[in-house]
Image 1 (cartoon, rainbow, N blue to C red):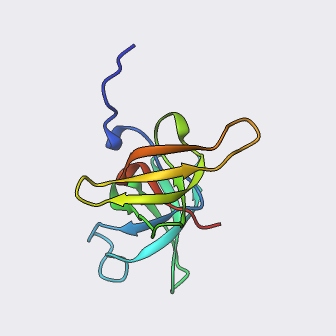
Image 2: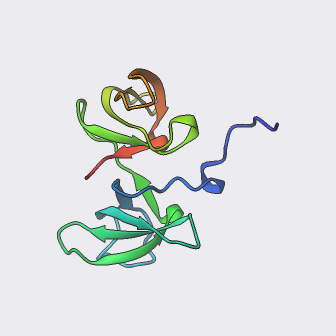
Length: 130
């Protein structure tokens, strides 16, 4: 059991139905700093997703190292991307910008109670778009 903190670049974190922002310049100005929605994960590579860009609706295959998560406003929905709550939905309760984390109220599901996660790092959740 090696319980070192996970290096985000070595763990697939992309999930469908999240907003991401392109942070690579490799694709040119048409994509750089633009936002899109992950519509699906590439079948044979969990580190890549098909991202449909907002405004242009162009779909492009991107590696997770080329995008970053988007933290929405308080009260908006997010999807947890890492750790034991990966895949759970919740809403932003508080934003701690000085330490780069948010508090998330997880929604109740059939098998899980609602709960507050007090210290979710920016890269561990992203804006949910369904």
